[in-house]
Length: 199
Image (tube, rainbow, N blue to C red):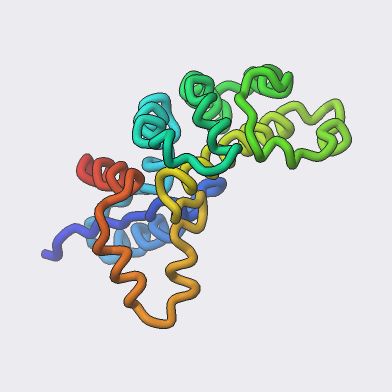
């Protein structure tokens, strides 16, 4: 009898839609009588990071003296606002609290940093009837601001869907990738390892 197979969707692959590869593989293995398990570390690591507990640890890890840009300084100064709103925002984005859309759209609920400066005319883009879509757009800007903070202060490779893409795209040998793998775990790596241990 063969050993069970553990199928893992890695973090920061595709968050906005289910990534079907492991589900298809599990279905195929089932037809062959092979026991398999699956875990979506993309969702699980993201939920662990973007939570009250995760952001508290994130901002605790950031050193105020190493913050470079004015945008990142602003995010750091608003850390309590991010920590106190993150669970509600994630809950909303998961479709569990649609009534929060009205509060988000009022533009006083979410802390705002650099990404919000790029917003076009929201009324023109979403009209009077697009409250849910407008709120999702604003919540995405909020998360993108946090992503910018993580890139500058915590992990230069961070990205919601293309983590460490530069290492894979630009390398003409495996040396740079190998060197990156020999470094100490980043803050994000530690979250990934902790989530994986539970599995």
